Structures are given as structure tokens and as C-alpha cells.
Length: 285
Ligand code: SF4
Ligand code: SF4
Image (cartoon, rainbow, N blue to C red):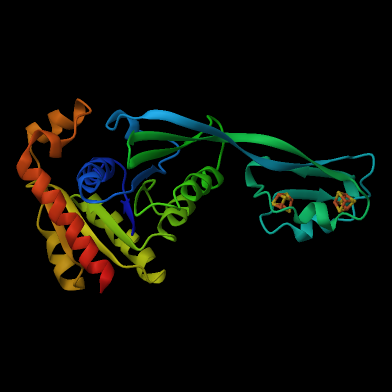
């Protein structure tokens, strides 16, 4: 079972939900992995201790164009689906926009003049931490200044394939990095808050998941804030409301001290276990 915990908006409590779910799943299942795919700002390790057992450097290939050998035919530019190459034959100029390159290799195959070679560029790291004899975390971490986290996220997800329960802490928003984490998921938990911003971004996330035909439910965090519009909308759309977490100073304090609520308050251990069972039930439907 692969469960992605996502939110259209940052700061709604996605990592709070995924780390607490991990703590209850560890007690229920034999093989549990939490993959921190918020690669621009991974923080699962603030809450879950583990011993680092491996760190892999993730790289991509980057084309290098030899301007002496290039005849400015433009074929590489035509073959590049990501508009990463600018070729100006009249001015005899050709440029690569590194941040747009997706390492597809098409330009290398296209060039008949051997004007393109490749170098490796470091993107980030994927670290595996053993938390117990049957649970681990995997962290995708993007290097500072690297534009796209997709390759690092995919490498982290690949490392988690042999697991009974995979929890995925998705990046916020609905961009490509979010899509990369929800495509392999069997179920998506959308975490929101009952505010106009929360509802707006929830609607965008739901629209995306509906287009991808994904099964999902919603956790509303900080209930008591804002208004009832998010609940009315969920009811109207018949979207399962999986759990409500109150706006509570004690919960905020526990989280700010990098502690897990389910370990501090047994009633929340039951609530999160019920959440896990509800997801399991919806996955089987
Ligand atoms: S490797 Fe692919 S994405 Fe990168 S510049 Fe070449 S064709 Fe474009
Ligand atoms: S395909 Fe080769 S020769 Fe043609 S523009 Fe690209 S690099 Fe230059």
C-alpha cells in the first residue's frame, strides 16, 4: 500500500500527518518506509530518528555543445521536447539552458556532427535511515541552486519499492514534483485547513487528482480556525473527510519541539490508527 500525504498549500500539516502515521504504521506492519519527497525542504528527520545506512549522490547527464564542430543545423533544438536548446543559425549561436534539460539524450542522438558530448551534474542526495528492524525513512534532498527535484524524488521512490507500507511526504503545491509523488500512490491524503486559502488550494489539488483518476480523502488540520466552507464543499463533492485535527496550542507545542503527537497522547495514537485503517479500507474498495 502506497499512501501519499499531500497538500495544495505549504504549512498545512502534511509532515505532521505523515510522521504520526508512520509511527502508528510501524506498530501495525512488518515493513514500513516513509519517503520524504519534499526535496527542497526535507524535514522528516527532525521528527523520526534513524541511523543513516546509505547516502547516494544523484546526478544527471548534461549535454555539452562543441561550437567548433557544430554546423548550426538546429536538429538538436527540434528534437528537444523541453526547449532547452536555443539555436540561432544566422548568428552562428547555440546555447543550452541547463535548468530545462531533462536528461533525455535526444539531442545527443540527433546530432550527426558529433558536436554533442555529455557531462554529469550533481542534483542532490538520497539517504536511507534505519529506524527499527522493520522500518526506515528515505530522504530526497535537492542541492541548493538546482531547479528541478524530479530526478531526486524518483530516485528516492525507487529505493522504497520493496516495502509493505510506503508513506510518501509529497512536496506542497500541484507542480510536477507533486505529480511525481502521487502517480505511484494507491491513495492520497490531502491535508488542508479550514481557511479560504486552504479551500482554494484544496480545490486545485482535487482537480488534479480527479484528472489522474486517483483515490483520495481529506484531513482537515487546525479545525476551529476559519469557517465551514471547506466542510460544505467536501460534503457537496462527496469527498471522504478522514480526520479532523483541532487548532490546539498543545499540539503546536509538541510539533514545534520535533516530537510526535501519537507518542505523547495515546488518544491520538488511536485517531491516527483509525485514519490508517480508514485509508486501508478505501484502498480495498
Ligand atoms: S538531453 Fe534532452 S532535454 Fe536535455 S537538452 Fe538534450 S534533448 Fe533537451
Ligand atoms: S544537431 Fe549538432 S550540429 Fe546541429 S545544431 Fe545541434 S549541435 Fe549543432
